[in-house]
Image 1 (cartoon, rainbow, N blue to C red):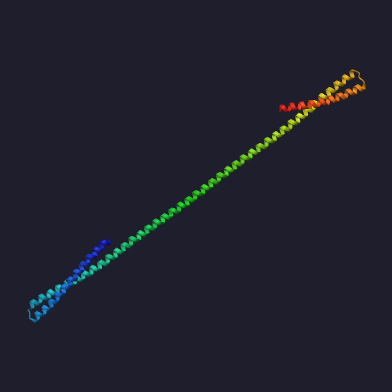
Image 2 (cartoon, rainbow, N blue to C red):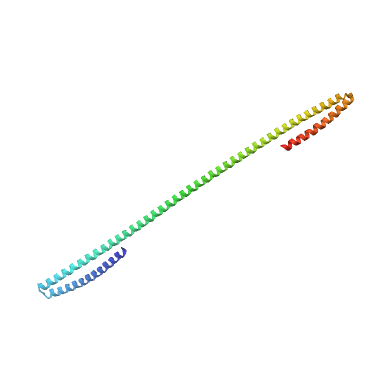
Length: 232
């Protein structure tokens, strides 16, 4: 568009130069005509020659006016073309700036949306990780509590069983020792009575029986405890 305007301006300038040259030629011709007219007048030329000269002057004057008018129109046209070209350039520049601004705004908006989306995803991921970690810790704590509770119950049960078994063994041992000792004493006493022994012999026998009974009780108790312990 600017190149076309420059070409048009150059053409108009050439036309204006030609018009100025024509005007100069006309001025010189007019001066020559004036001189010739004066000479003709002075020479008492006839009316026909003077009329022809005047007609020529009028024609040249009209041509000069037309040339000046054309030059003025060309100048105004050039100014108008330049103004329109400047306006077009400004409009295109403004449109380009607006387009760049819109693109920049869109890019900044997209970047903001992406940043907000990334922040939201990170927050959700952190919340999910924390929830999973909390659930894992709670599950491990529950399992640990269950294991400790089970171990405590088993330990208490084992202790109770051991205590009951020990009490049962002790009771059975004592009952057995008492029964065996009583039977032994009765048998030895009956034998001594049947033999009609004297009191001293009976006393010695009773002492002996008591000693043997105690020894037997001790031996039987130890054997019974050892046997039951091995059986358990």
